Image (cartoon, rainbow, N blue to C red):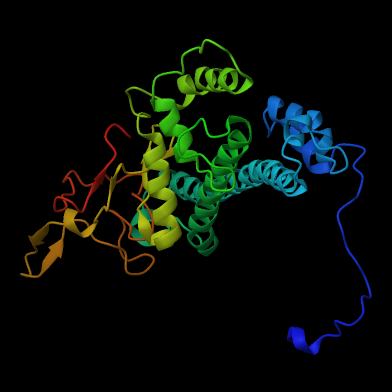
Length: 326
């Protein structure tokens, strides 16, 4: 159907948002009750009249622009929705991980009770088809939604900072500008204090201890986040490998590598078998049941296998190192 084929000379129905908001929206109430939005964000929502378009907040009235308030409402609702959605993806990741390792735990218990079973069945297929297909997608969506929430937070700051934060403009705000602002020295008190200067000092004092980490494994967290968000968006499940290390209780802990790109093939070492056929030291599994141990091309390490000790080296300029990220 094309627009020109529709009857545009008459209107049969009109759908709009409520003209008057008299109580908090269900989305906001549910998010607050579940602890998914900061209390101060919910307080801002209530001070703004629950984003009622008939009574725009006083801090926007000087602009005399209903379009600006409409964008403010979109940012507030979008930020709340993004935080709720991110929590849903996080719960789905937990469910998929539980599904994955419940199967493995059952197999390992059976192997301990019947040692000969390993020689017959080999190591099980750790990933069901659902996990293999869905888990990378859910992880990608999780990072993309979190990235959106960070940028919407920057948009929210732009409403109250004006032009005081370099590069931060309403409608074009990015969280990267907030990080740059926090990395600079805290604003000093002017001779004449203004609401904007007070807001920026309070913002710097509140966020710097949380977001700016001077050293340690979380020092470059934002660059690390951007790297995985971008590579997952571009390459999907093929952007990285999962590394799992098991403890004495057979719980598997997964880690994200800190260097990109990581080439599994560069960690392979060829050894000669008695037959004269060269076989890689770490062999991928071409099909279920063929390789009992070692690195699996579709996932991580088997709990009983050791990861390759050879460090992956890539040509200078082709590798992004994230310093202390572990």
